[in-house]
Image (cartoon, rainbow, N blue to C red; front, side, top):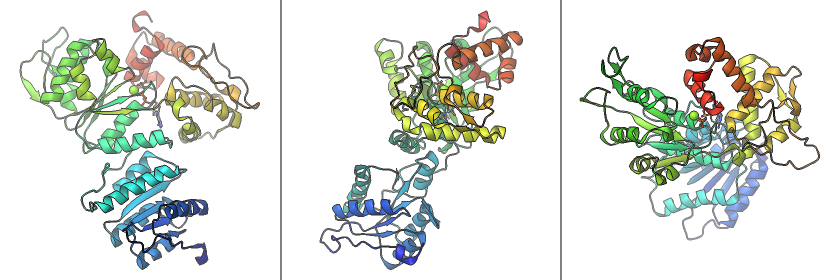
Length: 476
Ligand SMILES: Nc1ncnc2c1ncn2[C@@H]1O[C@H](COP(=O)(O)OP(=O)(O)OP(=O)(O)O)[C@@H](O)[C@H]1O
Ligand SMILES: [Mg+2]
């Protein structure tokens, strides 16, 4: 980019009496620069615009700025490097990072490096203004030294896809609650990514190097669940031939993820409450208490509040768990993420199989109009299946197997003549999955461990699937 590509826009407000923070805007996209220019001018902020990293660096040397608003990817530089530079020249400066793809990684990375906030493009003007006003307020209150990075400090390892404002909010919540010791309740429909979020919370916490232990409360009968979690002493029940540590003990220093918390008995809930309050457990069959150091994350796809009302969930435990809640949006409520998710999963499968497959545009279009009762998991499975059977290199609409339109999964009418009716009905993915699981279970004589191995899934997942698909192990 040539030198005259830099254009300076001095705000009319410069020199006015109120101390408005001075802003440096950096983006290699001219339209964003223009948009930002008009927003800042309208709000009377003094500002300067640069279109390359080099120009931005020069501007920082020439003038003192209070706020840097920078794109994350610049042709010759990165917004995160500029952030570093900015903090070097003015430690009190605040930085807002703009990104085309809102990702968990960018959010936490930016904030880890000291950004005040980050915003996903395209953004609405109000959203940008809200952030700037917050920074301005901070300036006015002279709080700049005390308010630092409010989000998590470590980098995420979990890849969570989604760039819609709903997902950006989730990333911010994860970043904010990851380092807190209090329990977090993750709610959301089946397949919406609750476990993924729980992992992200763990990986972004100070406990990241300690174990993350998952326990599916719905998959085990109460007595087994208790002995799994709390451990047991020898002879405490038939078959307890030795004493055993429970998961709360083995997860010491780490995080215990209690999936399907709604499926626990009231009796179990009392004991769990004690773990939260007293931070101690008692092995089954023992009177001694053992101190445990775990952080709890619970998840459910049920309405716990309603369960409290009807006496099926303890109110005290609910309040303990509900201090921080992360409510995941259903995929149908963030349809704009469908293309992003699709290309992510296609890329993932390509990495796994070496096979490159694209998605025909009408197939993608149909996906955008489908209701996704199984959320991201359903989308992932659907693509994986289509990709496995595809031998043309392009997945056509006919190759996608959408679930039954009835059964809580209405397919929305899609506008435009290009969209053909969706296939549905008999060969639903769930039905095929169910059939396949039953077949493998029969082949292994009901051995769930072996069956899970053959199916290439964890035993826990097999329990989950069996439950979801209505497979009764006893009758297989
Ligand atoms: N935002 C996302 N980005 C990438 N992958 C996702 C996302 N959300 C979910 N997934 C994937 O979808 C699948 C289901 O996610 P997960 O197991 O976290 O859902 P869940 O809410 O715990 O489901 P359930 O209620 O059935 O236990 C996983 O393979 C997960 O990796
Ligand atoms: Mg789950």
